[in-house]
Amino acid sequence: MKKLLMTRAAAAAAILFSGFLPGQSAQRNSIHGESNLTKAVIGYFPSWNRAAFDHTKIDYKNLTHIVNAFAKPDSDGDLIIPRGFLYPALNAAAHKNGVKVLMSVGGWGNCEGFPGMASTASKRRRFITQALNFCKKNNYDGMDIDWEFVDNGEKSKNFVSLIKELSATLKSQSPPLLLSMAAPADVYYAQWIKYEVLIGSFDFIGVMTYVFHGPWSEHSGHNAPLYAPANDACGSINDAYLYAHLTRKIPNKKLLLGIPFYGRSFDCAGLHQEFQNSVYYPYAAIRKIRPSGWDSIWDGVAKVPWLRKKDQSKIICYDDVRSVVQKCRYVKAKNTAGIIIWEISLDYYKGSSVLLSAVGKEFGK
Image 1: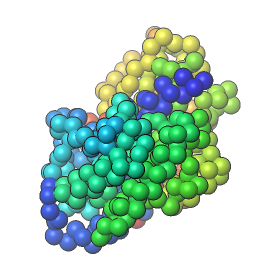
Image 2: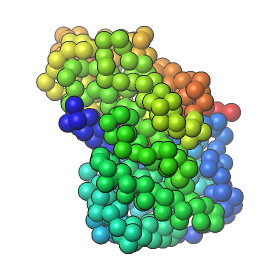
Image 3: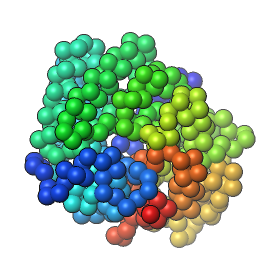
Image 4: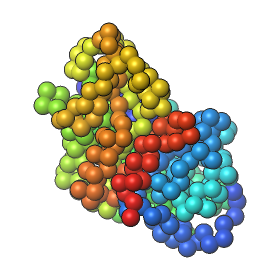
């Protein structure tokens, strides 16, 4: 079970200019910036994909925050900035549109340095100093921490020290800088996060409520069901919300739920069946294949769609406009702070981002 959770959770994240602009300081003092949205909409930007999806393609009016993914720490406490990560035009365009920009540190495959960096006060101080200086120099509004994964007692203790020290440093700035976290939906990993002592350190906690099924699963199933079918114990957004809010006491005002702009295929004839291969499908790719050769099915329990190839050789489980709207309405009904999106390039097709537009319409004032 632990191995299954590790593989599933790994997929969750594998899949988060210098100077101030005129009038920006007032915007930076607010957690939500100058958005016309009633909820936080935090979209991860894939820095590695900017050649195909640059800052001019982003629908800023439907976002409150952009999280630039990913930088990483090394085990000595140095902040490592990969080639292509620094993107002054993105920060400038976002701020011009009243959208805040955070630097995300970590992500799947970038976390090997976290345990060593967090293990001593001097290494944590080195990392925090470099991260703060990078944010201030390059016009970031804060940081997002995506450590995958805190999975034992020692890491848990050091994570508390890191977050408390990082938060104190960010909040001491004028204006204060934001701190968010990409949090696991799996109970196994979430048990090591000491929310009871860390809630006050975060502005937002974004739970990665997707990848409930994938290559690691024993059977095919939905990527991000809103509710779990009775015959499937692999979880759902509702299950993750109840655990985060009721069991772990994360307040709604800081809690974000994840919406994926992608799906997964399975080489079988239906849900809850054995399969051999599962492939990642951006929503834009799903839009290309939908016109012919597939039957579209709506799961009235899970509140998500799926496609079945007419020869019954493959299915694709994903989110569309209807399911995204259902999830946004769930967020409003539960009165959580908003959503995180993995990630904002995945629904861009023929010059539009229909899933992001649906989010903006639901959360508009």
